[in-house]
Length: 485
Image (cartoon, rainbow, N blue to C red; front, side, top):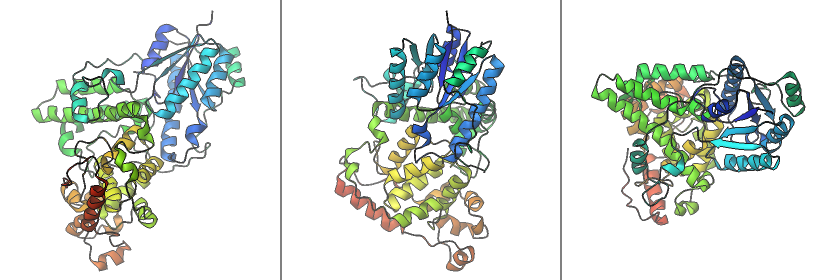
């Protein structure tokens, strides 16, 4: 009898703390991994070369882990409904295991693949892995999904978290005959990102693979997590974990991450350190809140949560949008952040909020254009987190006090008081006075010397304009007295 189990990897590119993979290994010693390079994803117009580069590096590392465990990771390049099913027909496994996803495309793909496999008499088993609690377990007293973070956090944080799953070890791979069958069914050598048409030559914020992600987690827990509450909003400092890409692709398991917070909390030396650890846990919960939201409301992927925003009169000035994309708005903190994303494939979270507010509230440009541009540039571009963040910034999402407008100057003064971050990403302005960099009120001679543009809009004027448009839409009947941050 064939005891082979195929484990279909997607956004769980690791061998340790992988719920579905651990279950497959518990069921059988012969576990073989599969990853399908899906044209339905890779050919979209919102795919970032830096993200594909990171993903391919993770796959290379995962292949090495499979080899160390005694098995192999097969690579396909096809529509999964065809590629995974044809491979399974050729190898006739006992079962195909995989981990579930929250995204609408992924859920539809999984239903189609599972249906096709079952038609062939092949067992299909799926697990929740990328989140600590599955959506059906964290709901309101009325049995509905949460639409406000605060109550979600209180429910979610009170629940017992699972221990990390066992790593894959002492496995058996395919025989030579089975390997030949796999090749005939479409298995290929792992290509590079360049082979797939994606070029990224700048350094990656985080090296791909499980080992670098684990090392980054340990380094963060050794030092930065204890000061996270104070340091997390300062973009010039290394105050965040920078694990977002690893979590997006599952190069590290979320149970491993949570367990690390428990361990460091046990040895915390002060109330301030314990508070910082809790604040970081709350950020992990934000990640999961947005995933639960997308699962419960899949239409979020296509438009605003709050119905009146479907008709919001965005101005969508193309020249201003391009200036925002290029980091040429004349607002130094905004431009520094956009340059960071364009050059590094990553942006500090505080700066993501600043530039999103600027696009939607100062330029009055549809948040979906910004959402897409982020996905085209970010190594950690993730639909649920990116969509949730943009809708929060645009006032169209799940927020009990939705009208928030960030003043670029006050944000810079509070979070980059020495203009260190601005000078790093706008080196042409490094000799400009700090107060001018923060306020954005550069004198004309400094602008001319640096070939730096004047502000493309007036913040105060645009803020009033946005509020008028917002009030005209009567969005949910909220008060128009926006908190200015």
